[in-house]
Length: 141
Image (cartoon, rainbow, N blue to C red; front, side):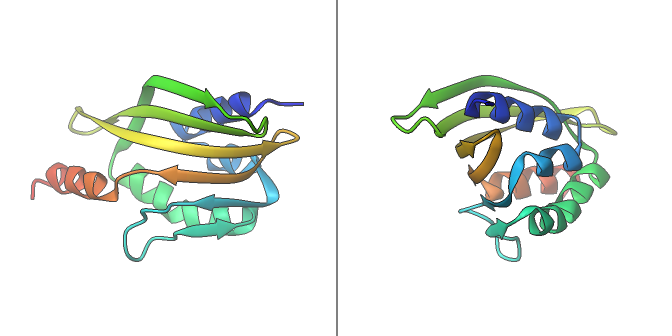
């Protein structure tokens, strides 16, 4: 059996590797991915691998087209809960805008529920305003 912490580490690796297929395969067939603070027009809740792939595909493509690349995560803190299926992970993503060489950081809190090595639910808390401001600065606006 794969522990939630291992699944979390695989998720981080797949994002850094830009491997959407590997990321989506971490979810249970009917797993859910939620962005509670999603900006208008962005999906707030996706259920099932098909919907997760369909919704994330364009988002990951836009990130790639903008030149954003994840270079690592630090610090990473994983909190155990009283439920063995649930962990809370706090981390800072470090990235770079490839064509400009500009670096950036984004802070996240993830709440994972993992069973039998698959993500049943992931709530991904991030700040879309910080992302929009960074993208605006990248465009020189």
